[in-house]
Image (tube, rainbow, N blue to C red; front, side):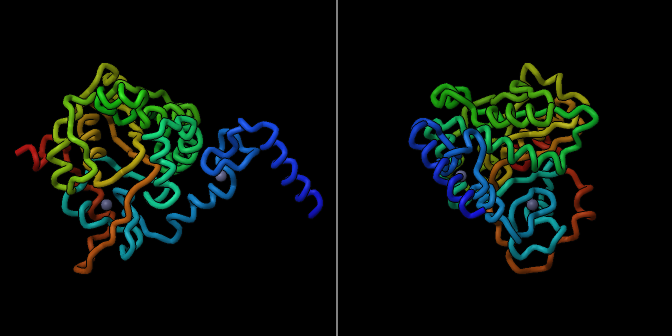
Length: 277
Ligand SMILES: [Zn+2]
Ligand SMILES: [Zn+2]
């Protein structure tokens, strides 16, 4: 057995040497996993969020939150989507890998990232009846500069795996918005308010369950604005899946109400966005 393991490792190393261009695991480069994450990387992803409670609504990792509750932000201003979930916190190796994917053009990472997102989405998104997949659009100029929209690549992989149609033009950006990176939650909302609208494919979402796809969920401003636009276009319900999301430490104070009391309250999207006033 041990001998067989040793031979397998040696063979993998040789394969890696001979096929120096074999990209191996797209995350760590370990040979023998072209296009798929190796077991160690899968475990690394699972380990990132292990044991952390997530907000029942927005899916952010919330240490200190009671299981099955909503975070403070979701109680105060319920997002218009049904629920959002992310594979792991936006930290460590995953954060680095996402930067490689987005900013260094490592498009091959869309495959394994989309695969783990599809597995996650399958657990909470009602595939029937009539689900569709919609990526968050990038501003046109940014997509031209980058050469691709990372959310659209992920949506393509997820749609293939879950056998759902993908509508890349269901949403459009109505205007350029300054980068979100350095903005606070309130500033992000104001920055994005009305920045998304129904696109040429929007009729495809009418009456459908929509799986909205993005790479990172930060404050939720993007997910909420896009969900509002999809609902305005007639979508039946919106669910959100991202690869990563933040860790939101819940401050002390009276505990938020249990999820079942809060999930019914719905923010109606852009129409009652405070930043529009
Ligand atoms: Zn790996
Ligand atoms: Zn929340």
